[in-house]
Length: 389
Image (cartoon, rainbow, N blue to C red; front, top):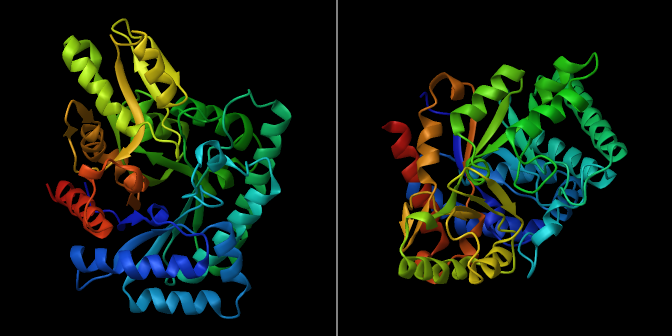
């Protein structure tokens, strides 16, 4: 494949909701990642700005210009923004709060408009930008048609704004909806159905397809037992663009292939990942091919204690370091990243790639590094090595 325009990492791995905390995190971690990865060249950063930080940046006179100059001085290129987490992504318990506000709420649109203005001000002239976002809302209880129509109206308003921006300034920015297990949109088929039913069903279908795209998270597709190339083929056939790839890896355990002793050891190892901060949706696939999505790993582990689902393949939504193939009795879905990189023409037009391992802070201690920047740099270097290969 050709090298993407930008490869970087998503800064939602860093705690802090204020603009001051954001800058401090970039100074402490991102600058050192750049020194480790490409000391003499800029490095891409997928900026996460909370709603509070975004409002503060826009409200400060010359705030965006000054932030752009500071990023440039430190050779950090904010080519994409993560507009998924709205509030404190590192509070004690995040879980379902990460999907709020939903796209049915004005607050989500207003936050995204703030991010559009900021990204437009940060990017060099002529560069295009992307913003990833929540897949409408969590999927339970079933979302009513009226609410989905409201979400689509907000997305259409955003697309119209992005069209005006490009016409007036030449700046192309697109919003990328990110499927996630358990949400209204958690599979490729869900995404295509949403586009066809709500976004590409009017005379402005061409506009919607230009400014509303997909953020393909490798881990999320793997958890849903989707083949990476098939995902891209489906989007291409539907006329839906992938604007951004989040390079990530899930946990995988094939219990069917394990002995009783190995199963016990694997469950004990998995208990290290059943933490309380984030959602760890887990899919199981039986030998007969039946797939079941369980909303959180701790709940499934309780069922496993009673002997259930121990003849299945498990895939867990826990973003593991992408250079890691296995951890004790557990494996990762790293091979899915390699499958995606080998997808040929299907990935040629995707300009923005970012490593998104936000779970470093809740990984078992033996997988962590003394300095967070060392782990992030190792991930980026691994990805670049695969691209060279």
